[in-house]
Amino acid sequence: MKINEDKINNIFSRNIEQIVTKEELLKKLRSGKQLRIKHGVDVTSASLHLGHAVNYRKMREFQEMGHKVVFLIGDFTTQIGDPTGKSKTRPELSPKEIENNLKTYLKQATKILINNPKVLEVRRNSEWYKKMKLNEFLGLLRKITHARLIERDMFQKRIKNNEEIYEHETMYPILQGYDSVMLKSDLTIIGTDQLFNEMVGRHYQQIFKQEPQSIITTAITPGLDGKEKMSKSLNNFVGIADSPENKFGKIMTLPDGLIGDYFLVHTNLSKEETEEIKKEKPFAAKKRLAMEIIKIYDGSVAAEKAKENFEKIFSRKETPDDLKTYKLQVGESWVDFLVDEQFVLSRTEAKRLLYDGAVEMDGIKISSQTKRIEKSGTARIGKHKFIKIEVK
Image (spheres, rainbow, N blue to C red):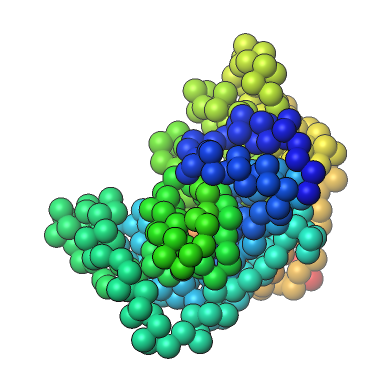
């Protein structure tokens, strides 16, 4: 592979919090070897949001240099549940739920990553864990201490609060770490909350006589509430699969103090361009921010249309023109309709939308989760999506 120092320097210039270690990674990048960039996902959810996308966009920079992302689906470890950031044990998912989440997850990820086998390889960790014998697993346990595993901050918090820690949770970093051995990972790009697990990966690679993977941790911005990191459960996220109109409307709710950070982390604009935009009034700056983000995931035409619709709804108090019409049988349930037409990714999300009063029909909220569609009219779904419904 050709070595491009400008591209290498550009990678290090933005959205990186920490590198373990920069010297190791520079040596690898200058070796001319195609790097294997491990990206492991437990498909506990069907949706990706801007917080996830920071890592994917950084991975794409490496792909554009010719390096390969190894997209590791944790179909085995998803059944265990990563305890990272959790004060309680994660609920167990069925194999069917995992498969359904996986299809949607990959579709969204490849809106950002280059979907070419030369630079993208998809694997599953069930490939080795379903074949692993008990004595082999016990051999992994002999190579790390219990004291090291429970030094994680979330475990220490549980201990302090007299909350349970289940043994399968302490095993999770071992499994994630051993994934790095099986993939011969050269680099992994993660949020700071995954650093402990990937340091365990370096530990096992050294034991198995591999060169330890380098680690990049990326910048994390708060969600739309300006407090917690982006999360579906907190409803403070902008989803990659959200419509351009929904993306636009959500971004317009961002606290003014986060505008600059969002430009730097979630758009392609330079620091100099961002500084100029920050001089504008917050409302105008957020409209520009929304457009720049939508351009990345949906294109310039969609961004312009989303802006026009937003201005009609909120600036001129109009219902958008050229609404899409859905023809339905009378009596169809709102939950089924929202899922079938992909306004949401799951029945749970549809019920939450109805419970929150985020669906209206001709200005009247549909608050019941069992409500059925009985008449034609104009519906609002979420804050900013308008459609026409015709029933037979």
